[in-house]
Length: 211
Image 1 (cartoon, helix red, strand yellow):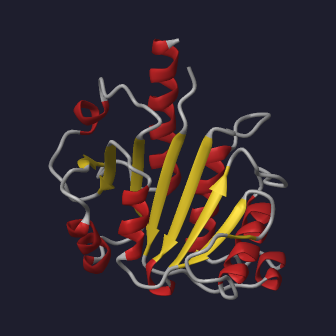
Image 2: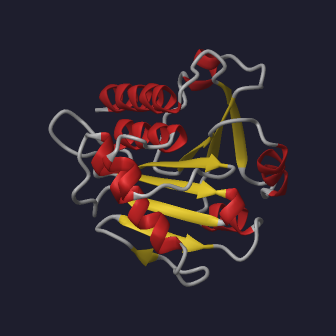
């Protein structure tokens, strides 16, 4: 049994960059880290995790990006190709229609939100049974939180990337109370890519147990 895995990476903002920056090896650190997260989320040794869907939200720009594994093309395992594809979809977001998905390259889509609370409305419309909120500041135990969860396609994983921004944290106070939110302490796992790597590992392990 293969589970659809859906992630949302919450970012306060991002550093603007160009193709020239990439060509000169001057990819901004936050973009480099995002690319590493994209790679860990989708890339296997010789294939792509086609059942995965990744959302990336930039709060300051009210931009939501979607990477659909079933439609992805041209996504290589190298940082340059990832940064270029991300650049194209970010550029697309500046001209995209409000509240409507616009395709950049195959599998990459951008949407401009009307206001900050619409990211919450977007999550609620997908009707996830459980939301796993990855945090650096909770007191829950990492292993105990993930053991015996029996992951399904109705689970949603949200990672707050970077600092624990009060505005971004406050968004989740507006989530419908019927949504089960499970906070996970990732204080021992610092980088975005390692958080994603660890979660993918646990989900893969769960799939092997089920099958």
